[in-house]
Length: 63
Image 1: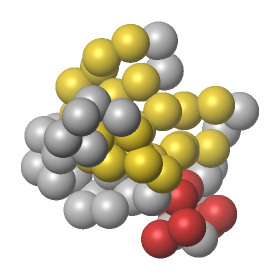
Image 2: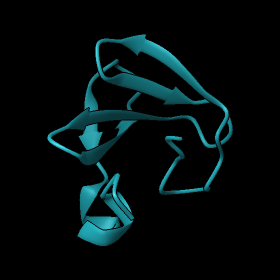
Image 3: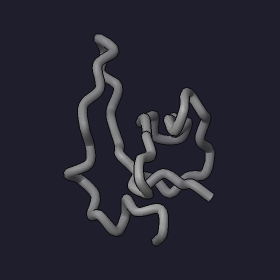
Image 4: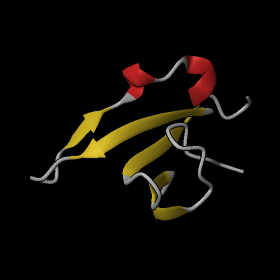
């Protein structure tokens, strides 16, 4: 089961192919090749990467 690496919530909404939105901490997640990529949605709608806040182990689906 996919969970948010930021808040550990499983309350995720699917917004696209391999794209999810965390309803608990309001970040966007995308999944590619077993790795979770995290983004913050800015006021203008652009995405800013949050990947540098998490280790590869925290972002890996196999952990």
